[in-house]
Image 1 (cartoon, rainbow, N blue to C red):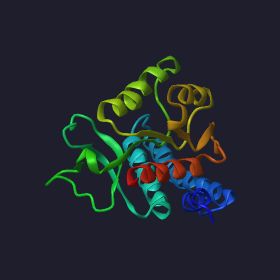
Image 2 (image 1 turned 120 degrees about the vertical axis):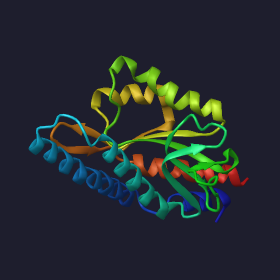
Image 3 (image 1 turned 30 degrees about the vertical axis):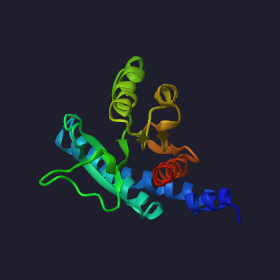
Image 4 (image 1 turned 45 degrees about the vertical axis):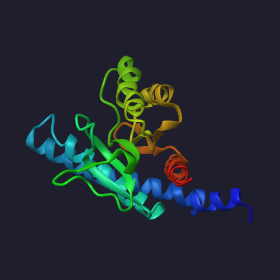
Length: 208
């Protein structure tokens, strides 16, 4: 077996259908908690609340599923930080397996960080006209400033925002599902596999 095919097998141990099935499971896991929060808010007559909790749920679901595909990395759930750039807080850091945070912190040396991931449980909450500016500031400028890859993964994104997100971030944007009002979100086939492949490629590039 040649080197190219060997690497492809390492990156994609599952069939496409298995990745898409896992992607649907991830969306379902997030939806279970989303409905619980929504119902509780309705019972209490609340219009807001639970956003940070659902954001944490999304990060934990992502880290849990990613660990099975890339076991030789460590996934640090936020609030997470990069040393000497502590003014910025991140949802998820992907770091070397043996990386150690600075004492009493969740901050890691830049040299031990493989990638930063901005995770959205319910997509962007802003005006459509502001999507590109907001993402470039949060993702592109951060990546340039720190010299590290920054990826964007959204569990659910509004249909009208998907094109804007992709236009702003290109291949660094990964969207698992399209919002369908009160119905179950519509999974976007291949997005989870694409994300796993990208993380694997980043690891390979670091090991060269």
